Image (cartoon, rainbow, N blue to C red; front, side, top):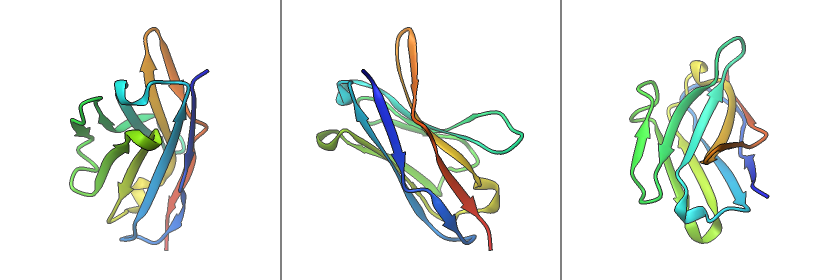
Amino acid sequence: QVQLVESGGGLVQPGGSLRLSCAASGIIFSFNAMYWYRQAPGKERELVAGITSSGRTNYADSVKGRFTIYKDNAKNTLYLQMNSLEPEDTAVYYCNTRISPDNYWGQGTQVTVSS
């Protein structure tokens, strides 16, 4: 059974940093592309960043240069380092992977950027 568990969210001031973690189980972690999504109140869920099994990364334009996605295959853990946070980054952040035909999500972790 695939399980994704996010952690690391919280309240941070504008300009601050947070690191999110996603612990994965039930999958061959190194074989899977992994993604971070976010959903702000009243908005649709959007892709923030992705990393392929080989380590190639991609980012939403709104977070390029500020966020870094990376993974530790030995720990079956995905990370999202978020720097220079802005109030617009406030959202619930979700970890995701896809094993066709299924789409797996974690429970989400709240990130709030506010002074």
